Length: 114
Image (cartoon, rainbow, N blue to C red; front, top):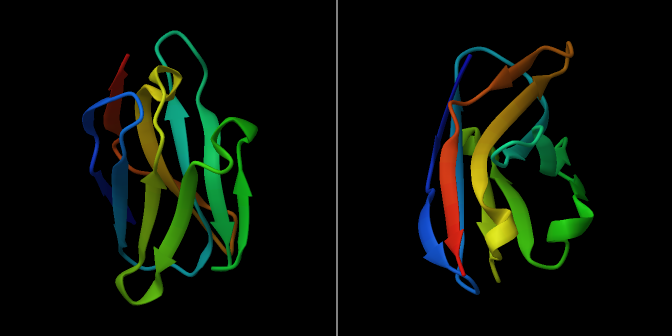
């Protein structure tokens, strides 16, 4: 299973970015998610979507970020609006299959300038 993330970049505070992640290989998806790791901090959950319906968001991004999926493309997206400098970090997409195997993408850097 391979996950390919894209869409990161440099944006000013208040701006928007859309991250994309496509999965390839053999799997049955249970949960897709986005995590981020800020400099000097542990990786944390940003948002996840289970069985294409149940979403979970970190409190810090609620109302600003939206996770969505495109089942036909085995893709997951993260629309990020009203970005803040504290959203800066490397964003990783994550897939958990129905057997609880977990796979990670390579990460895409998001930098929000003040």
